[in-house]
Length: 381
Image 1 (cartoon, helix red, strand yellow):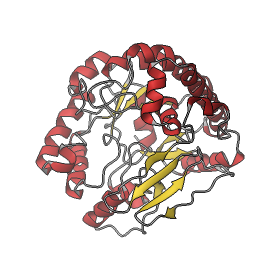
Image 2 (cartoon, helix red, strand yellow):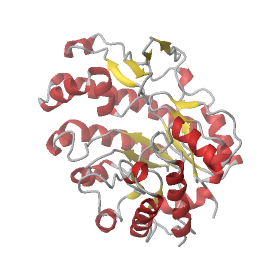
Image 3 (cartoon, helix red, strand yellow):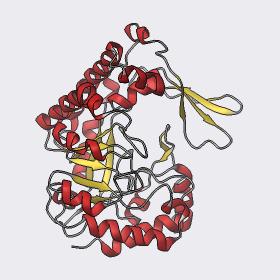
């Protein structure tokens, strides 16, 4: 099988020749620029100086030589910036600052800063949402050249194409990015009409974006990537009842649109202890759950997750604890975890291997290599 055939078989819950592999195939399975540079040096690969792919997370744009060395079966295809906004990063002495297209001020400390943080928010009071200038999902710059790139990747490579139509976070995540994390969760917990107004506005924006994105590339992509963190390390961010009344109907509307326009599968990224909401996500139309954070409460037993949800969900990720084992363990610790999770999840298909979220800057390159080399040894069916 080639890469695309391998991924498609797994997504259809069939056993391919070997478990598909995702290395930097999505914006939530990439590698931080510092970890990437260390990995390239460790592998002794001669590649160009890397560019930043995603400024917030400081993800590296992965060279084809590295993608092939780590045998990735996936490649990203992302929506473009609008014509009305250009990334301009300013040096503020002790930090770098920019304002994103949503009007949120982003800040990264020069000392000890690995990412841009959400710092200042355009909606300070709920009533500010009425006069807030929402980004334009119809801006032609977002879609310029997308179809040509999708066709080129589809015809000239064997990768599975992972299309990403979001230009911020998912509806809950982006709400916290323009209002502020605590402020919006308080509004949501109170079931405020302002929370409903903001979530509905974001849903309408992404309905338009998904419609236009799929008009351009829906015939070429195999996966549609959506991200919307719903949980912390130990619990949900919102109660199940709040999710079901305030957010779930909007997720369903988004994913129903995806399924009506393309054969691509809906990929949902959420970190954390998401177990109580997995049945709800399945009901919204989620086909793929990523990253399966095995260090979070209720997510440790990958064999049990496969037994309960394996007929309804494709598991994507679930490789090695990215908070403890991968950055701080020994290579043999990494190898042990990889073997266990791969053997738990690969039977019957429905599994794509990948990092649990992005590979972080403190992860030793020898542990990254141990992760993938061990996977290569046990991925065959």
